[in-house]
Length: 85
Image (cartoon, rainbow, N blue to C red; front, side, top):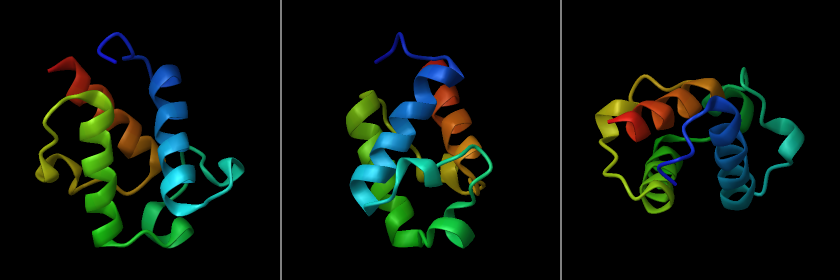
């Protein structure tokens, strides 16, 4: 996973996780899609996403790194930052 650091590599990973976890349609997942307003993802769901990202990346994910995440784009950039550390 550590070799996947480009936005174009990480976006499909994030999309697939959200589709699988929340039974969403892939078309619903766009960079500007808002997690809470557009996808009805709540804070408990957000914790589940962080746990799944930890499993997939093999990196320790600090919940505080995701406190400002509001959109799919934010999630992808947070994962990028995580993989660059």
